[in-house]
Length: 367
Image (cartoon, rainbow, N blue to C red; front, side, top):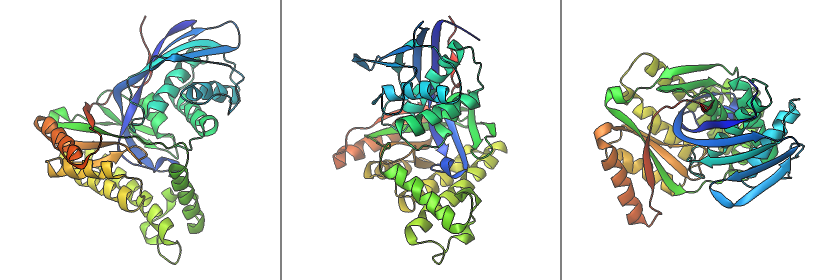
């Protein structure tokens, strides 16, 4: 398809389970959510790109399709990075006027950056008549974030945004790239997936996230495996790994196993309440072994479980952001209120909440 203008959307995501496994060649199980980035894009006859965001009305950014890493910073770097990634892949792309709007809250661990990258990537593919496949667009969006923005993320967020489907989880093997849609109809079971944005902002571009990835790569090297996806729990012994690396590796190995168990249960049509303990165990592992939680996340998870959630965990990269809780549909507001009350008691910023349903992935809007 070639077009001169149009509007496109790409969703944020919630990760049901499988955290910090994607850059270890592991398994992830996210869902696209109805919160999304929208881009209104028009082709230009020159090589200029002009970008503006409804969230930053006073800020308009301009660069060229020949942009290089470091030229553009801030929110527009995610847009510029996509142009750069396309060019690095050998694709000829035009200049464009881009107006973006997003309902995905920044800093909430819901992949606002991936939504922005993916919506621009899909629009650019159509503008240039490239007709690129969703998986290829996801990889280009990931490269933009890795090598232009400087955030060493895996591909889960972009794949969820591109591959999302209504009522379906996206089960992704990040090594092979194989994706499978897994049914996730919580309403039929009288359940809901509560998302609580703790409003403890997570900042992952530098520092802790990169350190966790480096720890995992070093652990894999010491174990003599290509990635921690290939390690077994029995391999993780003090004589082979120092304590910190052992704990990082243990999280990845056990988290991969949790993803596979959850997929097996949902494929079999098991009552989704049965996955609750896996969500709890995932959070415990992220807190104790991977050390990526903060007090707001831990308090929100513990309070949700105490208030009746069948399971809860942080979602996203950590160091702030959101939690998810599997709750009976009639208990959504009661659980959310319990978390809000506990936050107020502890002097934390008041949280926000919504219920997440599995939504359609990136697509062009009908005109």
